[in-house]
Structures are given as structure tokens and as C-alpha cells.
Amino acid sequence: MTAVTASSHPFDRAVRLETVDAGTVRGATDPDWANMVGPFGGITAAALLRAVESHPDRIGDPLALTVNFAAPITDGEFDICLRAARTNRSNQHWVLELRQGDEVKTTATALFGLHRDTWADDESHPPSVPAPEEVEPGAFVDAIVWAKRYDMRFTDGPVPLRAVEPSESSTTTLWVRDAQGRALDFAALACLSDVFFPRVFLRRGRFLPAGTITLTTYFHVDQSEIDAAGSDYLLASAHANRFSRGYFDQSAHLWSRAGRLLASTHQLVYFKD
Amino acid sequence: MTAVTASSHPFDRAVRLETVDAGTVRGATDPDWANMVGPFGGITAAALLRAVESHPDRIGDPLALTVNFAAPITDGEFDICLRAARTNRSNQHWVLELRQGDEVKTTATALFGLHRDTWADDESHPPSVPAPEEVEPGAFVDAIVWAKRYDMRFTDGPVPLRAVEPSESSTTTLWVRDAQGRALDFAALACLSDVFFPRVFLRRGRFLPAGTITLTTYFHVDQSEIDAAGSDYLLASAHANRFSRGYFDQSAHLWSRAGRLLASTHQLVYFKD
Image (tube, one colour):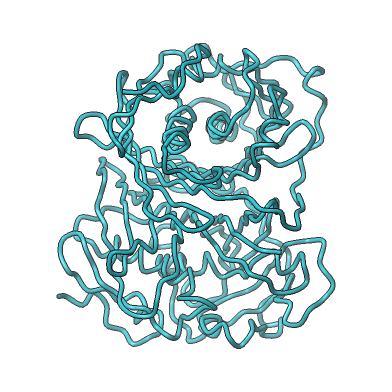
């Protein structure tokens, strides 16, 4: 087996994958990225993206990633089976499955492709907020280990750490960066696309059982824009559209400090209330 | 082989599937749903959803569907291979592939699940527009055959049928319903989630090469809300967030005339300019 990465940063450790064969890599959960049950969904998304990035057949940059959280991943090793279902001139469609033993825990599809120069415009509107240096560091509850990996500064809709009045808005906006100053890469951006707590917590003013079941992220950037973001804060904002009969959707956007939209990300979440 | 549906409406004809074996159904493209190249992406999404809906192992209602358009589907028969990668107590994760011969043309994942009564709220804001009866019927270009299947009434951002000034907004809003009054079902809602022409046409004021490469739809409704929509107009609105180096994203929402959000849908589109 070949070690694909070897850095000792908690993120690199958590997405370290060893090649088992041409269609399988092996990783392991990391206690630094623990969620309430199993690992943080974002780190699973990052490992899946990294599996494609580090595959010898891969062409181009990540364009889209959909991750379906089928069952909780238990602590320990996991295998990611992946194959390019289709390779075109300028893009490539991947199909992935994360397994533990005989059980499918996660399914995913990933789209990679080449960038080329075209007309361009950013129509998105980052919310107007104070600079991160003017905002106090925020917190998740202590039990959410992975949240300690990030420096988070909420400007709207922070975690309701104790029961509060239900909010009429499901919007959360925060500045967020790696707590140890690790520079952004595509896998880290995939991870950050799941950085938001469940929107229903805000609407109900308290915690309740909820979890992402499917997550889709669109990457708007090439490597040079990723590099330009460096280890600086990103502005992240999420809202829900509709809560109905056990499920709600979330749409979110991640901007560089300079106001460029780096990723659009959407998810469906189950909840009980 | 067993015919799953037998109606003669163009939609039902296009999503008619015959069972080949426990993991394969067979369909065929329909000239009534032709796009510039191959069939309309929406009808492919509908056929994939219908494949799961009509599978004997399926539980619950459609919650999410991701379709990756890997290569153009050629006119004629296609096979959809599908399997439940994971069945939980209340939801089920499907993996699908549409093939013609040995070639993968489309990959997809679908999430189905049970609905249960919970707290509910619709936070979405349908745009304020005139009633459909007060809006003139609109048109796509004649070459887009599938568009004739719908009665479309644009209230914002119509198709630039001849070259016009580039718009500063990528937003299109329209009332839309089946042209023959066919009542809504989940597959028809999946189809409508791709009813928008490429946003870049508005921003550039003209047609140019563009095509959806991945489409994700979240269904916010159960069967009773689908039935309540009947054959009435839906309000559909789409916008792009960022156009960059050959790709842009689109987010869209579909509401009932009563203003209930039926689906949120997102896609990534390639373009050349």
C-alpha cells in the first residue's frame, strides 16, 4: 500500500488514504473529527473527494460532489471503492461507495473537469458583515469534537447553546477558517461545505435529533483561486427553504474574504420534532 | 417483460419502463421529448425516478435525486440498472446507471423515505407575479421539441429568442403546467426541475453552447400535496450564482399556485463563450 499524504495536521491525517487496488483505497476515522454519531459528514465528503483527486486516472479539478449518508460510519477503518463511470474530453464522472465490511455506509458521485477561459461573472451577494477580527470566536457544544478544528465567528444565527426563543429565520452566517492555519484545498472546501449545524435548531431554539442525509457541493474555483484563499477566513452562510414532515433542505454559500463565491452547497436533512 | 405504465400521454410514454430483471429496466427515448442533442435532461431524470418508484423493493416517497449527465443519450432503447445500496428503517439509498450497450450515459443516486408528522414551516418566498391567466403564453425556439409539452408563461427572464442586450440578472420566473393537463406526480416534478433554459443565455443575451452536467432535486412534498397540485400551474424560478471558467451553477424552486414549495433543485452547467 502507498501512503497518499503524510502530513500530521488533523485534516490531512483524517483524509489519508492507502491504495488497496486500482478501484479501492482505505482510510480510517479520526477521533479529532468525531460528531455526535460517527465522523463529521464534512470529513467523509473530504475523504471521498480526496480518493478521486489521488486516483491516477483522474483528470481536471473537482466540479461537483454528491454524498449520500446511508448509515453511520463506525470508528475504525473504511474502504472507498471508486471508478470513473465515464471519461470525456473535458470531464469525468466518478461513482464511489464507502464500505465497512459488507455494509455500504456512504454512496457518492463526483464530477471532475478541466477549466477553460470564458466570460465570467459572480452574481452572488455575500451578506454584509463585520470583519472577522471584529467578531468574537464562537463555539459549538463541547461534545462536537470536529468543531474544535475550526475558528468560527458567527455574525448571524449562532448555535443555540442553551434553549432560546425560536427564531423566525433559519439563517446562519459565520467567518470560518482552519484553527491551525492550514491552507485551503479542494478537500478542505468540501469539508467546510458541511460546517453548518442543522437549521431546525434555530427555528426551534434548541437541539433535537437531526442529520444530513445527502449533500451536494458545486466548486466554482480552480487551483489558483483555492491558493489565493490560503488560510484566511471564508464567509459561510446557510439557510433552509422548507421544513416538512421530517425533512428540510439547506442551501449555503462559501465566499473568500475578497467576496468571491468559492462553493455553493445544498443538503437534505432529516429531523424529529 | 412487464409494462409498468400504459397511458398514451407523451410523458407516460417517455417514462414507460419494462422489467428486464430484478436490477434492470428498459426504456426508450421518445421524439416528443427531444432536446438539441439527445433527450431533455428532465425526462431522463423522470425515467430514473420512475425506475425506483416502480421497483418492488422501494419504500417511501422520493426525497432527493441526483442525476449526472455523463454523455448524450442516443435515440433508441436504454437500460437503467438500479439497486438499493442501503435500506434503513425509514429511508433507502438507491444507485442507478443508465446505459446504452456498454456505455454509461447517466449516473444517478436517489433517496427515498417515509414521511412522518413533525413541526413544519415554509421559509421560502415565491416571487410576486401576476396570475398565469394574466400572462401571455411564451415559447422556446421551435427546435426544442420537449418545450412544446408545457404551457409556459414567463413573468421574468424569458428565452432570448433573438439576440438581445445582455441582462444583469440570470433570473427566470415562469408559470408552467403540462400542455395537455396531465396531473402532477413525483416523476413529472422531477422532469420540471430541469425546465429552465441555461442561465448564461440571459446574461449574454443570446444562445451559446451549454448543457447541464449534474442535477439535484429535493422533494418537499408527500403524495397528498402532489395530488393537491393536480394539473394546475406551478410557479418556477431559477437563478445562477457564479459563472466561472466554463461552468455555472443554477438554483431553482418550484411552488404550487397556493405558494407551497414543492421542490428545490440545483444544477451545474457547462458553457462555452
